[in-house]
Length: 441
Ligand code: ATP
Ligand code: MG
Image (tube, rainbow, N blue to C red; front, top):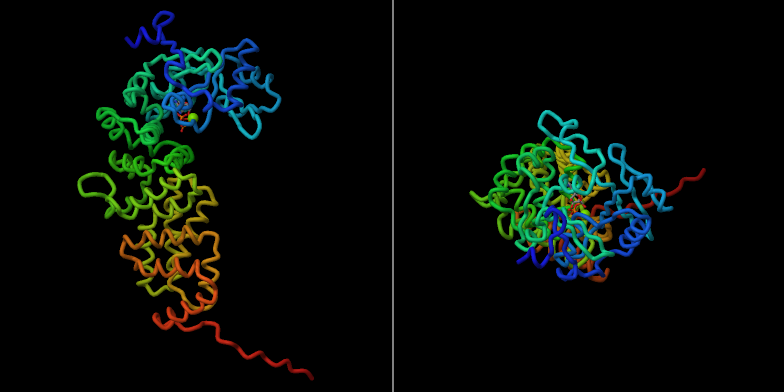
């Protein structure tokens, strides 16, 4: 039935499906992607939108980015587009710039298993040009191996990707174990894509992912961190992170930490409902859905908070000041994490700032309360404070107080502070000093 509908062409190697039969909305395609395909095709080349963009279009989801593949070589592509640049040393691809969009255009590539791999079987080079048939074999999932020509309005489907999309199921191309060994990052990709699109990861595949999780320790940390970050900002971080815990991958992804044991539901690897991490990720997902700005530093501050907070307590007990304890704990934990996780400097600085601001929520003297509410990270810091109520580290009254103090007029601020100072026994730290008289001789 499906075959009749889709009409199967040439040697049954692939199905060629009319995109209109799938209800694919052309207005979700970016203009630059269309313009590039038009130009390549007019010059006699084959050109398709490929990968996640086609998958998303079929599911009526606006794609995050558009990847284009063609049989033209990088130099031939570059020759066609004035504003373009060849990038990559191992495998050259072309960035074409149209307006303020950058579109990645690559030449069909071959899966190159005979080429260099490390002692774990991870492929180190994947750099041989090939045909579309070769290109399709190197892709990870059946749903990611659809080739869409928006001009002829046809989708080439080599691996029943459309049928798997209809079943909403993740299926790996080729032998699952082999494909996860040759690139373990695919484990995270599967989780990310399944979470993003509410797709099912079959139990058998989950078992293989669980068993191969250790290989995640062997991939370059920048690559791993990049994909994890994509997961956290996908709007489905809660689902994605639950998968990571469920499959026991957290110890491989953040090996130095073994963090928040209290947060895990007993037995299951899932997050405790309405717990600290659960609530933070749920809130984050809502923000993404509402197109609100989110802070990467906030995500990491939340994930690593429990570890930082415990270490801080141990420094408190050794008699260090509140601020110094927090400073030492934050630096130590961040350094520890940084060994396995690639952090951009600005994110490290952000996490540090958010943690240090926590200490200032106990200070009601001097100018500190006024400058705190004016701080660029005040909202994120207050959100973290609010979440800490769930860890019994903070009273909800303190959060409510700061929320009110933040928004009320200055005259009321002074009154609020007076009440708080007498309640906490904190004295004004800035006593008016008598101006020293200038002695002239
Ligand atoms: P997203 O929606 O996050 O962009 P995506 O599947 O498009 O998801 P990209 O990183 O943009 O992810 O990759 C584009 C395509 O390249 C994928 O759909 C897939 O076909 C292929 N691809 C990317 N990474 C891998 C990999 N590690 N192994 C095999 N194929 C990959
Ligand atoms: Mg993509």
